[in-house]
Amino acid sequence: MFNDYENFSDQYAAVVDSKPIHRAYERPNTLSLLPQNLTNSTILDIGCGTGWYTEYLISQGAKVSAIDISKKMVELTRQRTNNKANCLKMNAVDLSKKFIAQEFDIILAPLVIHYLKDWDNLFKQFFYVLK
Image 1 (cartoon, one colour):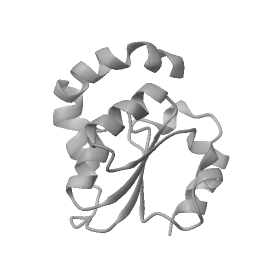
Image 2: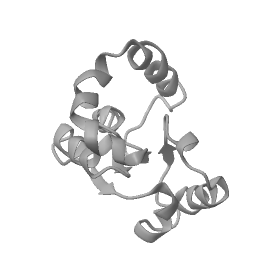
Image 3: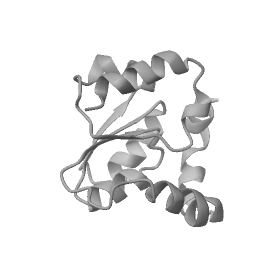
């Protein structure tokens, strides 16, 4: 499944921002869950994809680390944000290997968790990196 994103990442990037499901439903609803003021918030964007959320969070004054299992998606996020985020190719179940305890105010993982099998370890990782 994850290798599919390497193969069609450019095509995905070309259409994802204009897809009605993201533009009119998923993104507005996800953003409504975030605090109004994100200035100086430390946020981990898991499954950053093409970097839409990472770019938005940076524009709101947040300090963002963005991860994805796909090397190509990480590169697209890096390009989209002009290297203003800490972008890493990694799996969300390995957070404690790259980040320090209590490093983040918020974890954002839209459309990601359902891809992962080991939720026990995943949420232990979340607990480790959240303040």
